[in-house]
Amino acid sequence: MSARPVIALIALGALLAGCGPSKPVGTAGLEWAYPVAAKTPSFTMPPGPFTAPGSARTATLAEVNDEKAPVDWFPGEHPPAPSIIGHEPKGGPMPCAACHNFDGHGFPGIADIGGLPAAYIVEQVRAFRSGDRKSAQLPDRQDTSEMIKVAKQVSDKDLAEAAAYFAALPRVERVKVVESDTAPATTPNQYGWLDVVPGKPAEPLSGRIIEVPADTLRTYMGDPHVGVVAYAPIGAVARGEALVQSGGPGGKPCRSCHGKDLKGQGPIPALAGRAPTYLTRMLWDIKTGARGGPSVEQMQGPAKSLTQDQIRDISAYLGSLKP
Image (cartoon, rainbow, N blue to C red):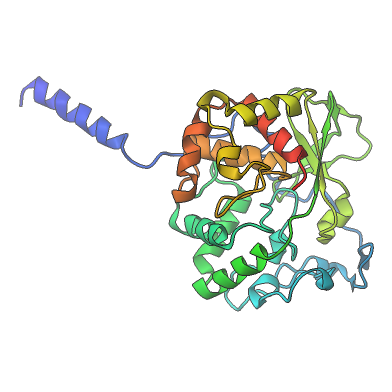
């Protein structure tokens, strides 16, 4: 065989290789949004017993730590929950409330799914199941890995019941965005969010968003009334608002799909009031191709043209809005 056909075959092979599914490209520069989970706990729970302000429930340390049957601190604040929400069936999957709480708004590093359209929730779980939804964090983000596991275990019946339950819940205000030059000193925990380090002085924000629980103990207890505080660079909210209104480099304003108040419309999810670090991860995952599927196809164009700083500012602005 002459050299020319060999070269042609090599070029064809390279072209075909490039046609395969895109691989996550990592998260360099966004370590604040993708904290690397520590191998050991960064926060030690006291021995208990525990009570949440306004709740009639008292829980032991073992009950608070039981992921198979998470504590429901405020059962009167939500409709009766399907079994899959609060109890792990034999052989799994982990119950939804173990991560998302009974109100759907979850822990600091977890998706806020309360009030999302049921069809959207079902589609996203199926995207985890099929491999369309991954994380740009390599080798994979812990919550993403857990959701992939859950998605492969959950039955379609349980999924439909859980989606209907969460879709019926109201959205609540849980994010406070504070513009600042500094933020509390933090350390990543084993769950993939940041914990405040007591006794350490504040640190320069240095272009990051630093998001921490408003109350660390109550957060680890699973108290759904506790939100997060997101420290963002000064001017980020105004810059983000301008990008959201104009559509940024892609020229497609967010309101054209997510509604004039950014609270969603039809099957399209709300953006207002979501945690900035979560929004940053989602935009970056979409931009890099780590997250795919039918519902995000129309987002891939606008996200592709955004820089990391623009994603940060957009996320800060959206987080500052009332849900």
